[in-house]
Image (tube, rainbow, N blue to C red; front, side):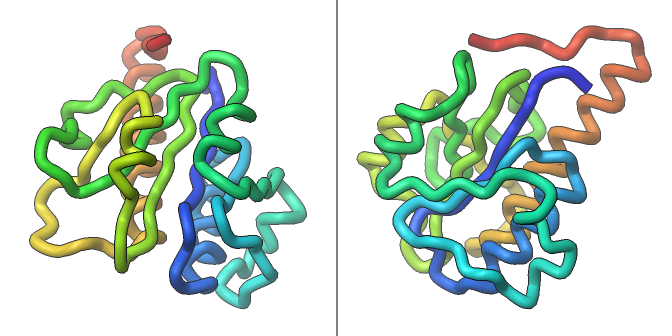
Length: 159
């Protein structure tokens, strides 16, 4: 598969959630995982010891994250708000960085303003667990990439 992607959480509420998200990121082939505003410490939920296999970054602010994104990487907020693109209609970027907020307060408007795209997972009547939401987004990305590859189509490049 072409391109790269990473995923992480701003101010993760529960340490186990970042461990579970890291495990999913590794399973789905993420190039990196990250936290913003809170350092990661080893969690029992990261049973695959992701930090030994793919880079784990920590950023102090979302501005810091955005400044350090790889060239042409889109910052994509995953947030349940009006006006967000629904995941089934979203064209994943070849280079993508998915940003999730903690369950109790999500992403601030200032953070959303820094993102290139805002995507929501439709169908849930309530806020999803952050690790679950991240896993759904990564599964959607990988599934569609495999379908395109099987159909002989190039993965779309969005800048």
